[in-house]
Length: 68
Image (cartoon, rainbow, N blue to C red):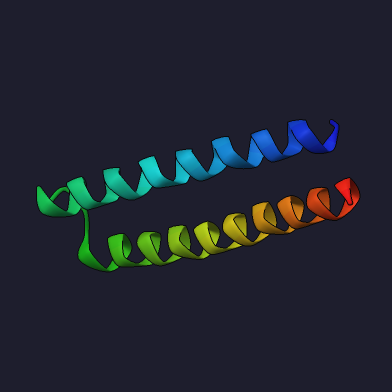
């Protein structure tokens, strides 16, 4: 997998994580999930979001440095 493909993969992962966050919000609003488990899942999802955002940003910065 080349760097461009990897970045694309990470962008898809970020979008999937956002979709998961939406589903967690909906399940909480409808009362389909245990509050404690839902809270834990949301915390993990937000941690993953931060990691993906950071990694995508680092790849973007590295590609800008290569262009110089």
